[in-house]
Image 1 (cartoon, rainbow, N blue to C red):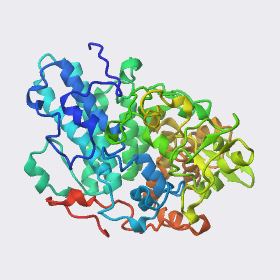
Image 2: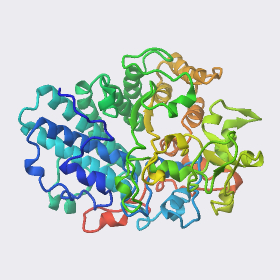
Image 3: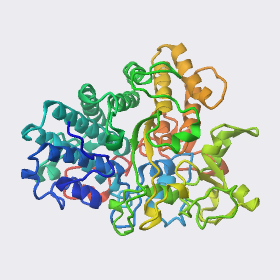
Length: 525
């Protein structure tokens, strides 16, 4: 294949992708967004086909509306809904959707932003468009056609998995819809959506590359390992324990040792979050500090990690080098006292603590920094603990444009320790090889210097809590385990997130998305 500059951040998102780079506030599955007027005659060369594939990746990095008022970082909203974080921000009116995720009694269709819905359906639509065009591209080699088809199916599965987890009941499109389809489409059941996801990933795996051989131009593209890891996760959510364990074993190989894809646990836990596309990263969403972007009124075009500036402490100032060199942020999703207590038991700190939590009060008491201690304006949710993994460290911030919009911290959506623990869980739930489950759990703990503990479902749940803290997994874990009610409604200091069984597992469909459609609102909303 001709070597093209297709690094996901910098790829030229031509024609169909212009909308993806400029806006994510368009209405549900808008099939004629600005920039698509030449779609019918665009796919005339292999390079144009490649640009269409790259366009299908673009929505996964969009976390904001272009209105400049709604910051829908997916991992941020998931953190706010979990027991690991509070919503934070300046007040209960500062990003009300984040407040509602923190207090689910406030969730309402009119409140929910459309970004979660629109961005993922944008990805579905772009995936369907490229799938519908590949047969007619002159000069496209069979090998490239097979890979592009596999990537598009992987991406469609990826976006639908997010939609199914957030909303449950969603329309299922496997081809670009006609305008009338958007008004008459009804929702499919979660089981129907999951079946399509499983089929797409199963179809994609054989034709995806085993590894990325040109990292400088291809980092961020799907591989066999990423597709198998995502399929294993989908099987886990569907409680197909044996299927999950088998395919995750393909990804994981020997616990703590080798596997066919070259993945390996990082020796230093902290380096997972500072080294892009490291050996533990299976699927990673890339951000840049070199875009030099400065428009807060068009945040859908930002290629930096906006969530990073959101989690920085408000009015933060580094006084001594013993404090982190952070840019002041907006104080969202501060770490909860429950998370702190999970990592500090009887005065003993989990080795992952220093890579997870900043104790800002201690740093300020030592004269190392200052920050606004009362930034959150939620007395019940006041906390002195802040996030490390996505913190806006100055070393990741660009020099051009508005620095707050040019932060290069990536989001690793799937990493090896995650797949180890998922396989261990599937083995235990499905009555599989307990000795292998023990070895997988041991490897995750040994990497940070912790001794083995007897493998059990509770031990695996606890390890996921500590290993993956603040990475956006916890809320979905609690929901699929059936633990959300007992955990989220009984937090410390009398905090309740008001989770309602049978309702709060999924979000309401945004009110704007129901207008002039055949869809119905999710139960309880």
